[in-house]
Amino acid sequence: MKVVVCGGGIIGNCTAYYLLKHNIKCTVVEQGTVACAASGKAGGFLARDWCKSDGALHEFAKFSFDLHCELAKEFDGKQKYDYRRLEAFSAEINRLPKKQTTEAQNNKVPWVNGTHIEQRSIQCIGKAGNVAQLHPFKFVNTLCEYSKSKGAQFIEQDSVCDLLSENQNLIGVKLTSGLTIDCDAIILCMGPWTGLASKWIPNFPSIHGQKAHSITVAPKIPIPAQAVFTDYGQYSPELYPRPDGEVYVCGMAENPVSSAQLPLPQDIHPTSNSCQKIKDMTDLVGDALKEGQVTKSQACYLPLTQDGLPLIGKLKELNGVFVGAGHGCWGILNAPATGKALAELVACGHSTINIDAFDPNRFT
Ligand SMILES: Cc1cc2nc3c(=O)[nH]c(=O)nc-3n(C[C@H](O)[C@H](O)[C@H](O)COP(=O)(O)OP(=O)(O)OC[C@H]3O[C@@H](n4cnc5c(N)ncnc54)[C@H](O)[C@@H]3O)c2cc1C
Image (tube, rainbow, N blue to C red; front, side):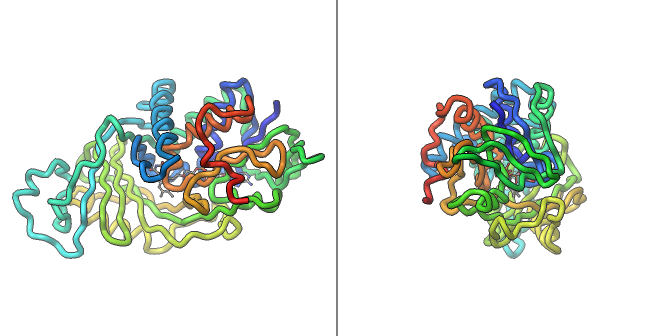
């Protein structure tokens, strides 16, 4: 069976990895480079049971979290992609500084010692048994190297620009370079750009991209394995200390735009001031960060669907077309379960994982 995966982000790479379990050596086509978009710039925070309010996503996310544990064992995730368990805390940031009390000294998160922090608000919201983290760029590239070593092909700096079909069956794809690839199946994993498939397939569901910014800071003193989710009104930065010593901080999302309005990955740059605003907010959290240096400023697009649930499944409009896209803010977490489900669908015609709620045909 000949399979093309369109998109070399985390969803495309997890799918390529699980296809190998069915002896399918797919071809991954990536318009930029592997993990050049959100999958390389995300936080990499994983929570086993934080999708409770999302119904169908809850069990799926738990399963995917457990798959991440298995993958970390298989690939030595601790060494290769900074996988580790950590704790998570919430903390409110006040607009005005507060006089520090003895509560600050009893704080279980001593590096969150800024004068603007409401010390009473600091709560543990995730224990090491249920939360973890990884470095998304390193994770995706670990899978990519493995898939290549097992015979999967990767074509970078080229994009799928059309699908070729006969009698409602997919027979191939056309690339911008002029190359055509014969195939029986394509899996569309184009993140926020997936909505562009409406040019090739009628009634394709719309997808939006929401620009979000992030920075990494090298703190003055080592920060323990404690993620912090702040509450600061409209902008509430999330801080993830990483094993390499840096602290990843994200926030500052803009209004979503349609797939057609998105720039190419190489043309995505941080909006002026957004990263500075994240740093300004980070400075309020604690002295170690205030005195730290910004080592990276970046932006990328979150992939969003109309109802907030991802699209995972087979399309009815054209035989041989599958979708894995629209994972919102939990795409790193849910990528292994998505890849496994899609690989099973392609190879066996059905998935052992319940993906009914994510049917990409649900809007028609
Ligand atoms: C700031 C931020 C922080 C985040 N933090 C977390 C987190 O801590 N935990 C978590 O679980 N999730 C997180 N997410 C969400 C997560 O990053 C995304 O859901 C996930 O990366 C989406 O992966 P993807 O593979 O679908 O899309 P992408 O990473 O966007 O990859 C899609 C790829 O498809 C390629 N492509 C598009 N069109 C074509 C074409 N026609 N031909 C070939 N290639 C094409 C693109 O170049 C791109 O590389 C975060 C997101 C953001 C924005």
